[in-house]
Length: 145
Image (cartoon, rainbow, N blue to C red):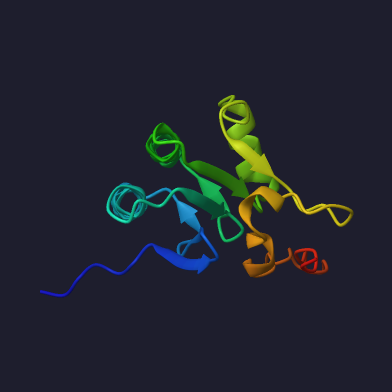
């Protein structure tokens, strides 16, 4: 019996764990469940304290996926850790806004004039650029200081 494919990509930059979703949508119940288990394991088993969740690969998140992220936030911050969400496209940002989750989560955007992730030990420089919509230029992180 083969193992289920990983639903997230994980990279370490200093003491920050950067996570990206493999799937472009968190809609299917099985995919959401598997991604949730992997995310929770990062926080519980590996004692991940500083988590940067790069949502740049997601085009859509269903309400069940938002629920998993709420639980992840609670798990990550209950022990004094930090969870930051970044790189959202407009439809994902709208889902967070409509559910009023933009009040709960630390959501950040790129800022060419400042390093919005200074409190994350320069982890922004470890993020791959967001895939641009057709005909648009890629958004890249600011250069490291």
